[in-house]
Image (tube, rainbow, N blue to C red):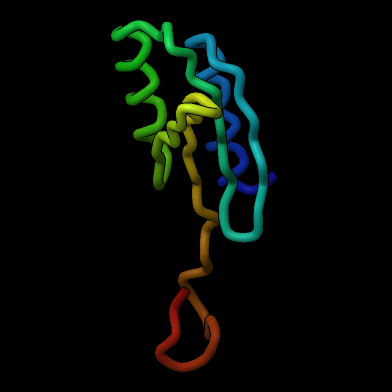
Length: 92
């Protein structure tokens, strides 16, 4: 299992412990975690959620009046740091 998946699963488990329902998706360059955030989430729970998603490489909140609030976090896959990665002078 890729390290990004392990990290994303750990984030998802911690968000679940706060009471959020999570989804984990593995994509080509990263693994994502999404969770629906209820309107009734307490301030203390928000602080815990922010501590959790701070472990990710990127995170955000998508909020609409139609679909509610979806929290997302992304953990990037590791890129090789040695060898010729795409030719001279090219590092991903």
